[in-house]
Image 1 (cartoon, one colour):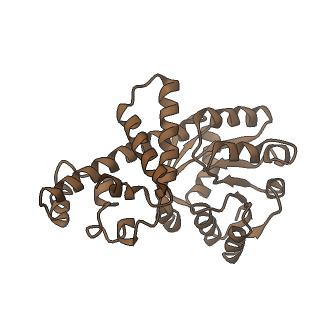
Image 2 (image 1 turned 60 degrees about the vertical axis):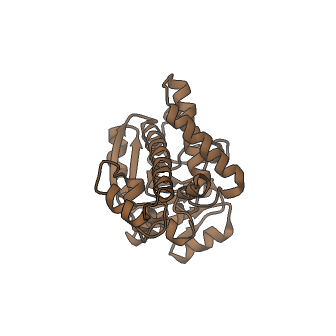
Length: 293
């Protein structure tokens, strides 16, 4: 049994915490939302009053926050994580943030003699609840080896992506691909319906043809073909359009920095921007079909 601190109890953090507790780990949580902390306590967690309090006497401290600014605010300062954590504690950042921010945090942690991994996740709320997440990890192999058993409590596919920041690089590239492919599926399904194709029939054809992809067969944006998809639940989110836009914007910042040409990523970012600007940001990202229809 490990002593684990967990900071950030949103749609992903709360079920991830619950799965750690199911594996008999002792978990202490912190979030600015008292309601979120109470949900975690109902699963068996203990609550802390601050990030500094979370850091005390822990084997691991995990963060699951929304932005790089939030992660930096938790880590920096005299009341922050870095100033109050033991060198024996492994810091695992499961947030999806800018690669530059991630590598900067790694450098600061290393300068302070602290062990850190960036470990963003993929799989949405359903994956967090089922402990079937894919977790992409950046950092040293030695630290990864220590953390892997803990990560396996929350995910099914735990992949060491390379040195510091490579977990974030993998997540950004993966989600750019996901955003592009979802728009492609939405366009094809919409065009098919306008040409007189029954969506179920087109799904059966495309899912067994060269157009097959995860966005179609696991997360179909049209109600009917995939019962567990958000499209069959009024597009209640597994992964919000707002979060998809955030990750697409990170991909475009990274492509600019790396001098890589990503025209489809750029267009996908523009389309999700339009969708979010319409006030639809809290719907699932597959709901963009409503704008394309």
